[in-house]
Length: 512
Image (cartoon, rainbow, N blue to C red; front, side, top):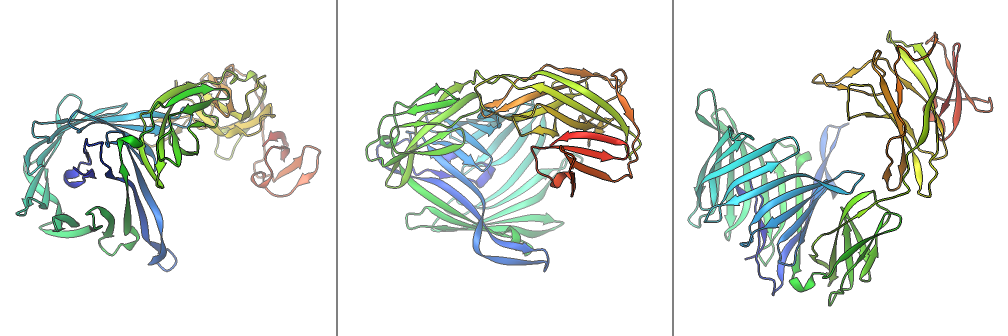
C-alpha cells in the first residue's frame, strides 16, 4: 500500500506499508506559497511574479517506511505505531529555547476491528480532551463527540455523507447540535469531485440562513504515477490575498538506507559527538539535533555548543541526492559545570521620584561580582518577584545587559501592579508597596541561563529610599561619562556605555 496522508473526515493519519524490501515512494516535503500580496495604498490585490513562502512541512520515515516525524514551522510531531501499521500516538515536541525540545502534548488513537478510528485522546499539561468517532460508512465517521476529563459530552457533531458508485465521498454536511432545542442544524458543507478516482476538487461552504455560500476551494493535480504534486487553494469572496499553492515532493524509502549503530556522546563545551555505520551508496549524511539539520560528509559529527539538558539526535543518509530513512532517535544530556551564578548582587542606592501619572518611580542602582568561570558569559538578566507571582517572576526587558564585563546597572520601576485582561496580576517592572519584592540576577551563558544569584529583598515602605522631587517638564540632558553633552535621545545612543542623565534637579548615571 502506498503511503499517503489523508485529510478527509477531519483526521490526518498516515497509512503506511510495512514492506521494507522494495523502494517505497513517500512524501518528504509539503511547501505552501502565497500567490498574491495586498497593496494597502491602492487597496488592491497584486499577483506575485514569484510566489513567496507561506508555510512548510517536512516528513521523515523510519526503517519500516512509517512516518516517524513531521517537522512544521513551529514544532515536531513524532509518531508511534502498532503491529498493523496504525498510528497509536502522536507526540508534539516544542523547542523551549533553553533545553532543546520537550513534549508539549500527546494524542493517542484507538481503532475498532475494521481499522476505523474510534477514539482520540489529547493530553496537554492543563487538560485532557477525548474525541469519539462512531457510525462509520465507507471508512468515514458520521458522528463525532468531544468529552471532557470526566467523560461528559461537551459537544456533538453529526455528518450527512454522500458517496458515488466507487464509494468516493462526494458531499459532507456538518450539523452542529443546538443544546437549547436539541436539534441539529447544518453549518458547513464540503463538496468533493474526482478524476480517475482521485480527488480533483474540494469546495467548502458555510450556511447563511437557508442558503450556502462558498468560502474556499482547493484543486489537486497529480503526476503520471498518481501522486499528488500540487494543491491550489482559492479563497472565496475574491480575497485573493489568501490564495496559495502547495507543492509536494517525494523520495524513495528503503530499510537498507537507514543508518545503523547511531551513538551520541556528550563531550566538552556542551557538545555531542555523533557516530554511525556507513550506508552503502550514501554520498553524504544529515544529522538532526533537536530541530536543526546539519550536513556531514563522514560517519561522525560534532554539534555546536548546546543548551544544558537532554537533546535528541537522528541521522539520515543522502543517496542519489535524496534524503532517506531516519535512524531511531538517540538521546543524551549535556551539562556545563562552569555555568556559575552571579555573586554579591546588591542594591547600592534607591531613589523615589514622582512621575506624570500621579504615582512614583523607583530608581535602583545594582552591583554584582562577575562569576569566576571558564565558560563564556554573554550578559545578564535581572528578575523581580513582588510577592504575587510565586514561582513565575517577570524578567525585566529594560534590565537585560548584553555585556559580560558590566557589573553595575541602573533601572527604573513603577509603583503599582499592572492588571492585564482577565484580572491576572503580572509584574512588569513594578514595585508594590507593602510587599517584600524579591530581586535577583542571572548570568547568560552560551549553554543556557545560570541559577539565581543571592536574592535581594526590598520593601518600599521600610527600605531607606531617598525621595527626589523632579520637574517632569524639565528637558532631559545627556552627558558622556567624561562630561561631554550629547545630542539625541537615550535610545539612539550606542549601547555598552555609561551615560549621565540630568533632568531638573535630578542627576543619575545609567549603564546602557
